Amino acid sequence: MFKDFGCEAFVHINKENRTKLEAKSNKCTFIGYGVNDFGYRLYDYENHKIIRSRDVIFNEKVLYKNQLHEKKQEKENIEYKMLDDIIGKVMVPKNHNDQQLEQQP
Image (cartoon, rainbow, N blue to C red; front, top):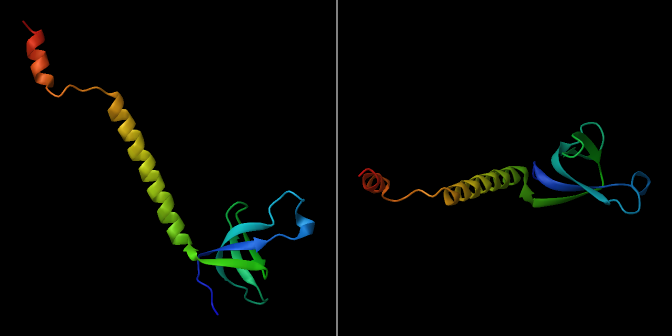
């Protein structure tokens, strides 16, 4: 069965390549199948490398495009929160013109 392009995948890291306390898998994104050799091709965002491996667990419910959309929404929420904080700190009178008239005489 074919896997969804761009889905989240976890690549197993061999015992020889990790210490006892390091993670046993690495989070990547599925980018395709091996051309000449059997295996899956995955992109590792931490190391910015393409990995070819057979020992992979896929999470097809989470796609790369969904991750980008979530990051974009998080960024917008942070911007709105900052804007709310700025507006809350600035005290602007409701009737700014009325106060100026009272101060003139």
